[in-house]
Image (cartoon, rainbow, N blue to C red):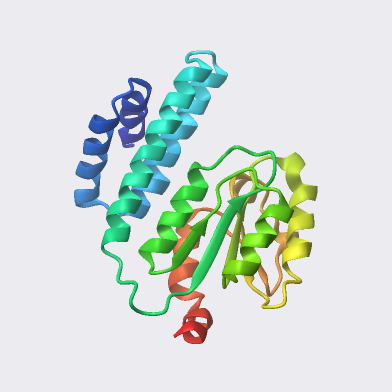
Length: 219
């Protein structure tokens, strides 16, 4: 089994952001970006979380690693955005995390994945109250709204958000992701309008195979 994620995690913990990005670039020579996100960066951050839980690193170490991971995703996103042709009409997505949750790395990876598929992305970050998201939603009118939740005790909050957003007058598709989707399934929340996305591989499959109607409507 590859230990790329542990090597990258150590570079994060050592504060070596440029070396970490160089390491990522070497991986991207032979692998697609999805592999980097799903099989390297995500396990690296889980590994760092495990070290913190075992008291082998400090909170400051974990924050440093998260910041460098954020730097890498943002730099990849900038490189991607420079090569995107925005002259044609693009489907739109808005992404945010539920109130009182600070997890956001997966959400940024999702934003990057949408951009790679030619979408216009509005990323609002984590810890967003519903009333604040609504003002942006009515201005932007996205075809898809992506909502991230990690912790099981946010389930009631997530259900309230879905209920409110499902009644928006333009009927956007709602994608539910984050650790909660991966760990608990959440199949009871699914409908013709609501789709639970288990991970980034599932998201890419949906983007490539399941959104023809959205592309047709916006073309």
